[in-house]
Structure formats: C-alpha cells, structure tokens
Length: 164
Image 1 (cartoon, rainbow, N blue to C red):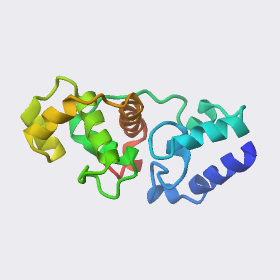
Image 2: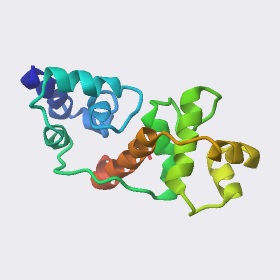
Image 3: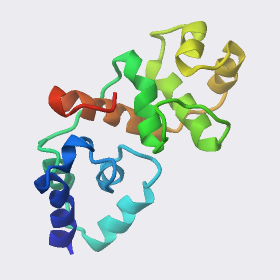
C-alpha cells in the first residue's frame, strides 16, 4: 500500500504536472504534511494503515529533505491561509467557520508586526472584526499549517512557484 501511495503521488511529478500544480495541491500530500487543515483527518488514517511511511518519505516527493515553518513574508500570509483551507481564491472572504479560523490564524502568525488597521487592510475586513477575532483563541493546527505553507513556498525553487 505504501508503494501504491507514493507511486501515485510520484506520477504527478513524473508526468510533469507540477508546471500546473507546483505545490501538488490537487493531491493529498499537503494534507499528509500538515499544510492544510481541510484533510487533516487523512493523516491519522494513513498513519494507521501505513505506519512505516515517514514525513521524510513524503517530503522527498517535493524534493525536500526538511520543511521549516516560516512567518512570512507578510504579503503572502493571506494566500497561505487560503491554501490551508483549499479556498478557491487567495482571499479569506466569507463568514464560514473555516474563513474565521483562517483569519484568526493569520493574526496569530502576524503577531506584533502589524497594527490593527494594517491587519484589517491585509484581511479585507474592518478594525472591529480584527478586535473581535483577537478575542477568540487561534487554532494552533491552523497556525502551523500556514507557517508550513509559507515554508514550502520558500523552500521550493522560484521557477516552481505559481500560486503566491
């Protein structure tokens, strides 16, 4: 089963589909590596069925030996957050819970680097929304997924980067 999974994921690379999907977002790989919260449940399922499959095995599919979380650049954080929830656009528009979670996680990743009005402008919301979001706890899983997305975008060669 492990060979089947990695062979399937390697087919995307083998057939050079990475020029269309450089971060393999059309696969389950970002979920398995913790870069998305949408399919997080699949990590546990794959770990149960394929206990010998390691993070290193999965990172190798990207051609990486490691993936370090990153906190920026600031102008890419919203796009990274959108990627963590499989948003169609690179914005966090809408009132769904996943959008609220993503916005709150963005605020956490930004930390003290921007003030309230700057964060509001970045997120495309008003200042009172930023104040309200700061009062709710951020999902650390979501925060980590954003940081890993940013880390992936920094780690891959610029020629492969098309989303941000």
